Amino acid sequence: METAARFREELIVSLKKGDHARVDFLRLMIASLHNAEIEKRNPLSEEESIAILRKEAKRRKEASVMFHAGGRDDLARKEQDELLMLKDYLPSEIEAGEVERVVRGVMAQGASELPVVMREAMKILKGAADGKVVQEIAKRALGIEKSSP
Image (cartoon, rainbow, N blue to C red):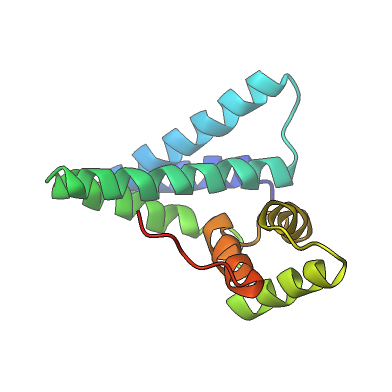
């Protein structure tokens, strides 16, 4: 089922149940997908919808960290709750072992610099893994140590 249609169906169910938090979340996601559709001026493909949901998940993670750092644990909790709801709609991320296999495969094809390895690995993974995870695995595989901030 198309992601936007699934959100609309679940919105109706949540409205009937009186689940206000889920209703607010679903309305935000429907609006986000609709805005992207307007921006594109064409209907979104399922892959584009998933990419937008991944961006929304990243925003929720970052907002949660920022709210927590600012002492607003109530808002941080709200963002975390929305992130949990959002994960129900995202395909599961692949395991670190699979990411490492892809990174090593890219390196076997001759890529030896981090930006090249990252670009090629992300093309293969097509958003199925978090970019930070891919970067950490690529750095480790290339023997690049973390620089302390």
